[in-house]
Amino acid sequence: MHSPLSAYKETSIKTASQGRLIVMLYEEAVRQLEQGADILDTKQTSRYDEVNRSITKAQAIIAELMSSLDMQAGGDIASHLMNLYIYFNQTLLEANVDKDSDKVRQIARFMDELREAWAIIENQVTSNRALPRTAINIAG
Image (cartoon, rainbow, N blue to C red):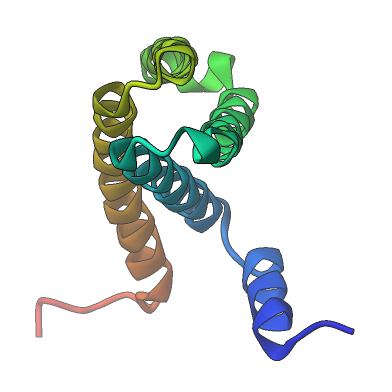
């Protein structure tokens, strides 16, 4: 049986727009990376499996973002995002091997900046959809 919170989360994902889903993916990746970096900062080697899980989850999200890119329709933007995602995954791989919280936090900051940009875009798209479609007579 699902808890009310789980049901709410599931419904919010199923009903979210594509832009909102992208923002949600970024949010979760940033959350995972910050969690992993926080654990690394404690220097508790017994918790490195948690760090690995957090970084691996973030990499899976990045892979999902990569697969969602439309390279033909997206043009240069999609190409640049793909290059960023490749860089993010490579840096996270190195950070996971080296247990380097600075690298993890760097990627978290980059992803948070992208999340902010996508949130602005999503808000603009949502606002434009909410505008009435009737013509406005500015002549009086």
